[in-house]
Image (cartoon, rainbow, N blue to C red; front, side, top):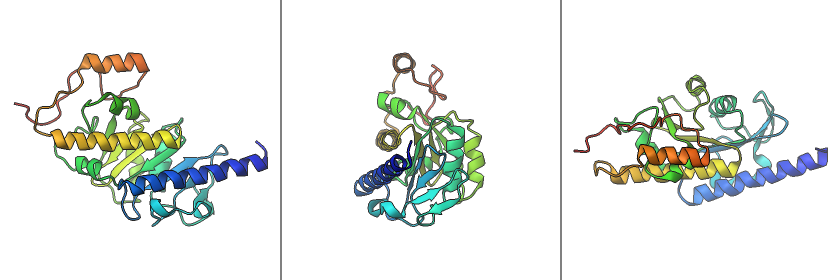
Length: 235
């Protein structure tokens, strides 16, 4: 790729971050200056939203440009959640974008006592599984704590969708669009879970989950074809 083409592509990606960030903010999926977005560039560096920046009011020129080691090259000071993004990119080699939100229903689910860390949500809908592949729960860490990186690495790259306890979802995708769509599907499924909690909802059966796996080539680390207890009494 020529220097001119590289600059043009990076400009397009900066605009893409701003467009998706504004959409997420305007729909109430991440309030105030919460949440952050990153994109991995072909040269190994990243574009990442700045610290204390609202996703609804991003300036393409001020988005942080980092090198492959996470050092700031240009733009504003990056989000404090760099260790989180770095660990997920490291463990998910195909990931090209990461979205981290403080979306209300996903955060609420992260606080519930019955949640299975290996399967935060049951298989309520096919699109939850198709978009996210399932979600793991990571224990609470102070925002920006480097120790969260070890918790992410401990998942051994099996999950592209992670929920930080008392904090919010972090989702990787092979494009920014894919990461945004998966994050939105996680939030909507969390909302469904809360609406249906203690109402004995009908989940997808193991056979229905297996059909999705076979038909769409899904990798679902937490669904092994057996019934999973969602942690509360359905009686």
